Each structure stands twice: as C-alpha cells, then as structure tokens.
Length: 317
Image (cartoon, rainbow, N blue to C red; front, top):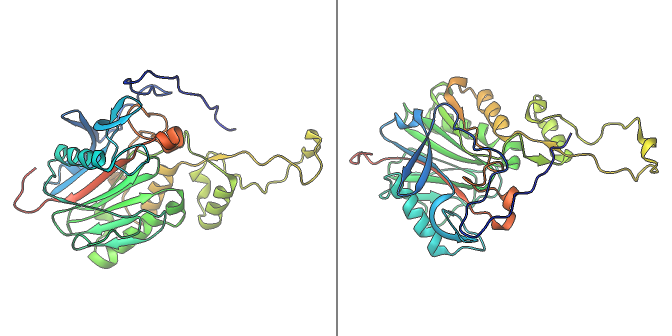
C-alpha cells in the first residue's frame, strides 16, 4: 500500500520549512556539532580517530538565500550563485577545522566508477566513489536524497567516500569500493568502519516496480530492500472488477525502497562487521527543516556535502 502523501504548510519568508513529521533524534553513535551556526553531523567512532576529519552537512548556517531563508547550499543549483556556494564551503570546512585540506569531489554520474587518488586531480573526474591514503585531501560527495557512505580503515589509514543512489546501489558501488580497498590498499573488511549519512528513508522513497524488478534480477535478498517486492508482472486474478479490457489495466502501484538498508546489507555481504556499520536514522524527505531533499523540494532543493579525509601529520584537530 502506498503511503499517503501530505503537503507541507506554506511558510512565510525567513522562516524555515516545517517538517511533516516531528524532529527525529539522532541514532546512537551520532553527534551534532555546531560552529558559528553551522550544524554538522558526525560519527562518534570516527571522532576517536585522531588523524581523521569528517562531517555530514545540514541545511542551516549558510549565506545562500532560499525563499528568504539563509541556507548552507553546497552544490550547483539554478537558484544559487557560485560565490555563495564557495563561501558556504569555506564555512563548512572551517566548522570542521579543515580549512587547510584540499577539497576533492567527483562529477557524479550515478555509476559504479571508483577513483583512487594520491593527489588532487588537475581536472574534476567523473565517478561516484573516491578512495585515498594521502594526507591533506578532503573527499566529498554531494547529495539531496542519495546515500553518502564513508568507509575508514583505522589500521591502514585509508578513507573512501561513496555516492550511492538507487542506480549506484543496483550496481553494487559500495561492495565494489570495499573490493577496491582490499586490492589496492590491502584493507581487511573486518577492520573497516562505515557510516551511512542522511538519506531518503524506507518511509518515503517511492520507486516504480521496474526498479524493484531490476534489483530482484541482481540480488537474491532484494525482498529485504523493499516494503514489498512487486515487479509489476504479478497476475491480477480480479482484473475483471475494474471493467477494463486486457491491455488497458492501470499501471502497478509503486513500491518503497529502503536505500540505507540496501547499502548496509551490501557492506555486510562485503565482509564488514555489523558493529562497525553506523546508519543515521535521519530521512532527508521527512526532515527538510534540517536537510535538503530533491524528492520533497524539487528545483528549490539545495545540496548537502559529506566529507572525509586524513589530516596532515603536523596538524591537530
């Protein structure tokens, strides 16, 4: 059964949008850091690693104007300027005490392309996952519903940032990144710690049955990714009830994809320990007062930025 859609109440200029659900508390193991009105989500397990810098941005504290509200937009959108985005980026890095690190991000294409970098590239590369063991690089992924996933090896001092939408998840980009870390850096999956940041949740992510069918063709456990696994090919024994001739039946109802769970299960299948996988319980679509959601806001949405990197040896957090 499809969830009932509700409309957000209209808001006055200068007032933050109201969430359709009460504010969700952070899951255990997660904290929220505030620096000069910038709110950053962090993982406690990562904060214990002295050489690591990381953070998941939120909506508040920026210079971008969105319908009278000042927001921290960190990606290219039609309604915002490049200067605003650069200033927001500077503020975000300052909140992480990472102003001296070089930001590296990819031109994201919803793929399974993984880039391993030992220095900042001269030109932005295409892809959806980045890995490095080079200090001074700050790896970033931009999202507005897709899953931002970090993987960290505390022993080998290797980090990876992954952008996983439904297409990347279907192509197993998270599992393939773990494989790349094993082959290139000698990482042991049991040593890895993973964090899945704010993502559209299993409460809201409605997709067509053709998406469910694509997952069912590739994953034996695909039924665990959806509220109910319907591919649209199921017979309808009561077809005569709608009084429509064959070939003119209404399209099958959509299904709900649990994107964070699908990626967590991929991490588990790649060999990570469940105790080392942390999933925030924040849904981008439910909490647009705190986050950005393209599904909810469409062309009035901004972009979140999630970053992870290795501090240079001569710097302290």
